[in-house]
Image (cartoon, protein in one colour):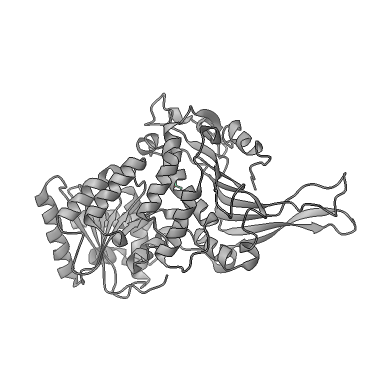
Length: 485
Ligand code: BG6
């Protein structure tokens, strides 16, 4: 995974005046360049509709980079001047695309670059097909060096649209040029899942239906819709979080050991997990929407009262579901997934609960509590894991107590890299392991498309709570409960 980046690539960002560019991409691109992670340096061409000149784009970049704690602020003006250019694109005409091609060639000449290009679509998903067509027709799918296309999520809104988008992409680009981003795959703990599982014999040998009782994946957020109502109200939690982020976590938890750690070997195994999941029944899913309530000690409005949300909106802000992975390893082990906005706290974790011993020698009717061993993999708010296991309480022959072994990345290694930094470096190095392949995205939609179609009503839950009570029942019906620690 740490192949060096050859040459001096041009990073072309479509949607360069938007929020993702300002908040995430610019700080990461700046850090990659100034920290010397690419020997030949990194140059950026921002592309958007706004009639900006290079200077206006530089001011936008400076403003955003001032907020970035990394690097020396006194060098920002010079960095922007030397590394950033802007092009106003008229995407409605072929001459507009030709003008873009000419501009790319011009900046490559100006900076003496070698024709290796990243084309990054930081755009609303409706714009993906026409931009991919425009790039293809202008001959920009190929260049003098390598060309890589990066597509943000959501990739399609259902199976048919994902298939159509893949077909458009493949008309112009080969799959080995395509990087579908899911930022969860760039998180350190998510990548560590593979090491944790496959480099530790004691974990991997227990990681199956014989020893695991059930698996829970929770991605809880305390924030509400936060000014993204237009996107979110048309999207909902299933499309925004479950089809991509939670599904990625599930496949990494459940996959078999790949024959190598090459991009396709890992992704083949993830696809096999998706193909092994039984169709999800309506009775396996709970949809919720936050109502009025409290968050962070303040009163917050109901989702339907948020600015930009339709007053009678039935969009879900919470989903809980139960899955079965019907393969040799996981047969009979329930997987529970849930995600929601306006839950009590930001918390992303995977809890793998092991079966209790078949007979406990330490059982005494009055004091025994059934406390199965658990591995909790924590992605947020901090990254690390806990291992909960039983120990004997001194002085009590039969008494056991649960204790946790605890590991946090930051305590051992200091702050971890932003997921986008990991992912952008992988794009520049040409490593597709942490990106979603065409068949993977389609398999995931194949699973969730029927869920969207058979979607029942949403149950309102008060903001600041754990979602509708029916989400708790979904787990309790199988004799378990959600783990909240
Ligand atoms: C994004 C979703 O992909 O992920 C957001 O569109 C969500 O709605 C965000 O808030 C969560 O990401 P993270 O890394 O903060 O868990």
